[in-house]
Image 1: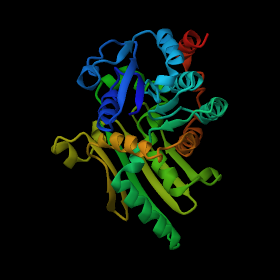
Image 2: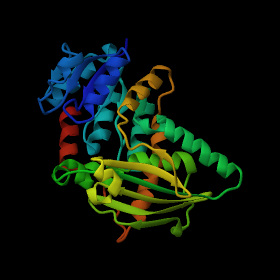
Image 3: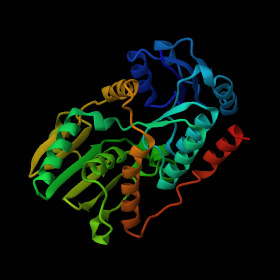
Length: 325
């Protein structure tokens, strides 16, 4: 039985991890969050120790490393690097929610820590496990293998209300902006399927990114992708709105839908933990292409909207200093 400690257990995505760990036969033995509304623990793991103080939790990791198999990092995006580093230095393998970090330099730094400590990071790239994604990738790679230049149109629209503009998720310094916070799944799939973008400047066209919407064109060596990422309800097709839907996530080739993952895909977290148990879980290097692709888009966006995404603001630095004196 694998034993887990959770960082960010009061957050939205924690429920999916707790359910998946339970279904996989694992045990959550400890959890941390500065917010104490964590009654969700009682559903499956009522005996888990809970910490609301980061320094106390960090000390627990160091003294209980032999009783832990994984630390799950489910905290806001800009804290991922500091929290993964904390777990690695404590001597525990890490599972980290998307995006692993919000710049490629962060991947390099985590790779160095992992090598130095001999521990492993498993990023959550669960959309790769979706059956529709697997079929689509195989289809596109077959077309490319036959010499076809594949033209794809893809939309990732998921409605968000006024709360989104107030939360950390809409703050580029904390979430990485809409391309990282919502778009990481889409861009990971594109990089996984088409490979690296050519170096030519016209390989990328971008409109935005704005706080809640971005679109553009990516020209790979063997394909072109027109993409849209949006949190605006107006970008949902009328048929989706009329049916009371809140998401429209599709890939199309020649006007035909080849992959639709608009429905609930929370079950993919269970698939991730199942893969992890068989030794096939994603590794740190798997996260790099999607992150690098987003950086390329940001560098090509109007006004060259490159940002100093790390250090991740005073909140991340202060937390790191408290737990790593």
